[in-house]
Length: 330
Image 1 (tube, rainbow, N blue to C red):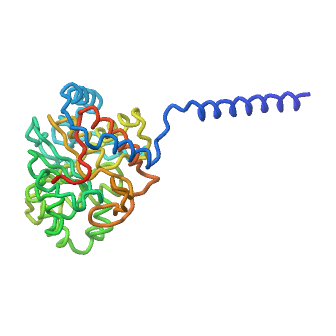
Image 2 (cartoon, helix red, strand yellow):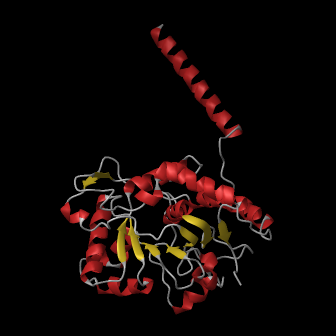
Image 3 (cartoon, rainbow, N blue to C red):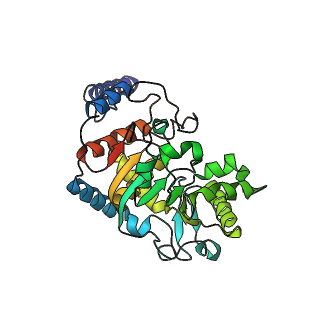
């Protein structure tokens, strides 16, 4: 008798679960459009004249200020992270770093950006930048943000420009491209000279391995009297930005560097233009393109959700909150 009741309960639960799954299938909270659908949506608005929406810009600045406080917290500083403060890693649960005299000495005193920032360009590395002739437009911006140490050599200048004020560096790049900076630091120091006197922005306290690699990069710059200024991303800021976009249907284990930078720009800039953000293997004419403007290395699709990110950015473009540049700038 007891066994029969137990089986009846299991059957009822199974039926209930099937009913819930069917409901979500028929009436999903959110379903990402396919690549072709996204392309068609972009093409419908391709010839529309973009109009700046001051209300939308102010709204997003307000929302990001309330959730993430980018003006004060986007980077670790001596002011917001004193000795003894526990920095909980945003990329690893239950792991942290307690600020000591050594790490505290490597932080800048306060937010070093010349606020308020006016016209900002956030430059991704998408293959859609190839033959775009957007370099001149990018260099007209008052403040230029670039992602993950992109090449700015002569063959790319017409498409991506030369100006840089802040450039990010994922610690994994230090590991794969510069052999963890264990043997020689010369190539790293020489390669980053192309960014002039920019800020080098690294998520040095997101993972334990990232801490070691980011500190080595900072020491390499300091020992070589580099013109770059190291900024360590505040893990609280990164974590809160992740929650902000998760509430807006971006479901990823971790946001892309590009979306972090767009979020920073929306929080700090009066006008934001975005270049090189196109996560698809074809351009607007459905011709194949490489993933990056300089190579075809694919992202970790399990780690990031770039199509979802693009859909959200495209909605901001249509509303006039930011401007996405796709195709040719000439």
